[in-house]
Image (cartoon, rainbow, N blue to C red; front, side):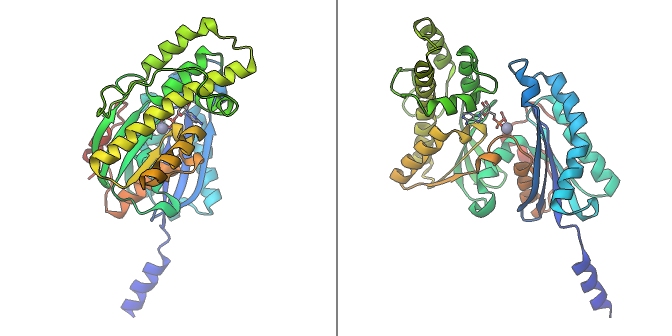
Length: 355
Ligand code: KG4
Ligand code: ZN
């Protein structure tokens, strides 16, 4: 009888999901996944139109909009997944890196829910969310690879030994790849965020029209530098008629080719140095169609397994935060409610914030 009771109780356990929030920059996002990290629902309340007015993200405005968005978003994502708070086993949120006033909104909400429901809280590193996102869906499980994270604030090459064991191989010395796309786009009169705009126009342009510099640093360096590209475009501007559609498309295609070539060649070099046969590319810039095509060609040629997240999981989203949280929750990990947000949280420190 007792055994039956225990069995019934176990069968009736309904806490089979994780709820995660992401608010590190200008997107408020919420997602629900099951305990294996399989995504059940994901929503993003985008602030792009608001920040476009200013040509970039205004932290104070982002924070205020996170406050307005976060609660309705939680309600909607629970409804989408067809569950209630009773079904949630743990609450997760991005705790850094990012804008401190934005990070505080998502983490405060997740901690509040964890306290109210008497469930664990997990602080997730945004960069780990990106890094692991290519393993979502049928690409799992998480396994050793070279990870290239290319976002608006970071360009990182990481040797992934296993979950939580990340070795930094290289990073950018100045601008991140996404920042290079955004800054050049602004210089040539395209709206914020510039990466997707350049991607669109590049499809109609000639990538060899203008020879922009590729900064490889020394031959075996795994560090990046994109600030010279911005300067090169600036010097070229007086000679360009950007009102001419073809010229504009050619500039976009040439800029994109310069960024893509450096990213792909450094990734190939990192795979060679580490003898890794799997590469996983993530972050907003990994949506770029030119990058995805070149990666496929180069990886096929080198016999490397290429893992890419689907585009909706490349740019900031809570699905990747839920997935990273699920990997850690499975190992019995959770975070202290005292865990602070950290605008400069380094990826290699991820383990230190979680017990
Ligand atoms: O990962 P993400 O959404 O946010 C950060 O964590 O930074 O990345 C945003 C960056 C922006 O710089 C944006 O311009 C760039 O990703 N991005 C792209 C594309 N889509 C987004 N860059 C090039 N091509 C794209 N299709
Ligand atoms: Zn991001």
